[in-house]
Image (cartoon, rainbow, N blue to C red; front, side, top):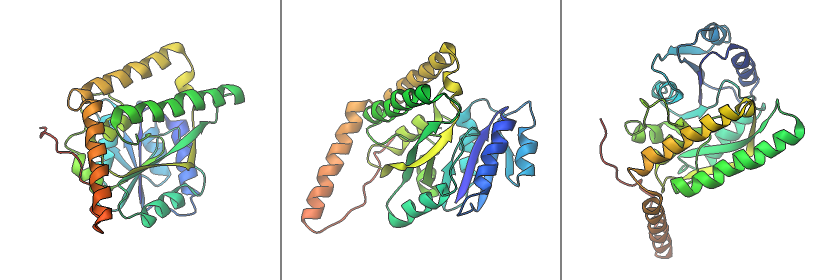
Length: 263
């Protein structure tokens, strides 16, 4: 497993994140930190922690995350953000999920906001995280990935890497990746896979509004290629084919929907 952490001007939080990754009961093969033109010492912090640092100067987390994924040659890509604090068994749980299910393309989990007061943190988790998974599942036609706590097979990434909007700094990279994986890929949400994340998203009304603007932009970009009713029709048809195949004693691996080529 290789952990990819995109970062921009988050040296202090990154140091805590890398320290938590260093305490894993199942250590990663490598940690890749993608420095997205930071003006602080994020890259130096990553090097001191023993991470492999890659520079990506194109703006946006989509560009940074994609560059990190491209650098992973084999196995499982595990993604978190610089403000993520995973528990010590985080990578062990990820490894077990993929080992137990060879057909699993991607995995995601939940989180809690470690720096918010208890009541605000609970409300943020209910309305933001649960709202994200419920709303985006309807939009994507599949389980949506959450960038602070997700993993995928390298093969799954290679199938869609040309289709992600890595040059668009206004897309939510995790949601965009969820769209590209398609409505029939086997993506699983594990409620027991929980990490801590910063609640700074909710530090101001302007920050919340910006996040929702990016979400609508991401939906608009991807619905232009494949609206939700098309995605759900593909998913339902695929499910019916699998059930018919099982009834005949034939098991087939679902194929992602065909997409027009991008440059």
